[in-house]
Image 1 (cartoon, helix red, strand yellow):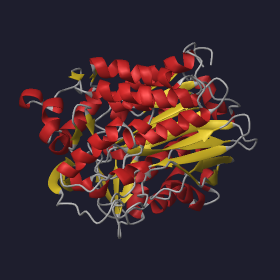
Image 2 (cartoon, rainbow, N blue to C red):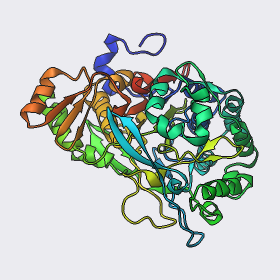
Image 3 (spheres, one colour):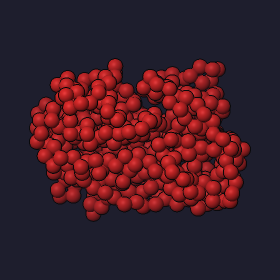
Image 4 (cartoon, rainbow, N blue to C red):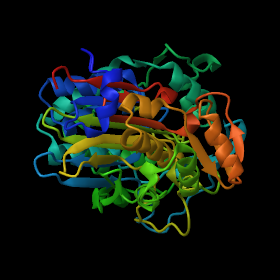
Length: 486
């Protein structure tokens, strides 16, 4: 490695045999990563840094996530080798009685060149989990005071944060939902969408962060903000009630694992079955020639159904003690229901077609494609920590990144940045740069090929720490930073 911790050509043959992972932070926004790294510098644990970074996401990455959303966390304890997954995703509301929601608001979002139907409004709002989730992660594995991990997000909420160019491009696609109603003055002041390099500022969000710092997550579930949330959602014809909020709990969920190239991948069971997909790959996948391997991988990744845009973000952190914390959060598209005086947009999970399946029972936890994960070696030591945005492409992005790391011996930045393909029904959607002979092998195997003109956020947004350092996905303007000397 060079002085900055980047891979050199001499490192490539030994990357898959690295004995340790450097401390660092990977995220989808430079400010998010910088906050996480500063918390590590201040002596915080991986959990402290991840929580501070996620709260920063709720200020800087509101195109993707927010305090009104939900998510999952995966934590690796270096001392014990234990992996724990926490579920703080959204819950179906309605436990307060038979109050019925009004109709959702139908909009169309342009995604991959095609209009995609979405549903927003009060009736799309589920019980949020982000405040409870970050509180649970900090309470279990944090070592800095709670106010110290909230402080960076609070400071940024008072000033606003510059919007990266990649997220400005996402805003263009998501504007029909994000700039709807009260979101208009935030994302499109004067009727023009804010662009890359311009300030994203949410009036009132500092008040929300102040309350979170002072009263903890309870502020949103039983405290001062709970009534504001209920009143706002019900005024928009939703059915969220005080009992829904008071009863919300973070859950520890089962950890699955799969072997890949002599390593073990640990994560929750997600809607797309990421771990099970890895487990189902042929046992000799690492020994197959690339053209044969790509056909097997395409078959394993085959997906079906409508492709959602995937407004989600991820933070991956490894601390100097070797602990890792990966947290993925989302708003869906966002309901365009804003909490008065608090600058918080609520989630639209009940309007997400691929998540709102079957009969939705009040109090039931909703399903999700999110899959924050860690990888360990045969001795139980950390090899990598990663997660991704991208709805149904989360699985694709993570599987391809892990194959790059563990099978092809790539460093984390290269594995994340290399061109990907995603399979839907009988079609392989491929970014430019996927080798032509591999595309030919897929075509010969009977797949239809759809070549995309450039790298695109459609193909997910991985952020990870592992071999070769920390990296965010260039498709979403991601950033990776290493702790000096870590």
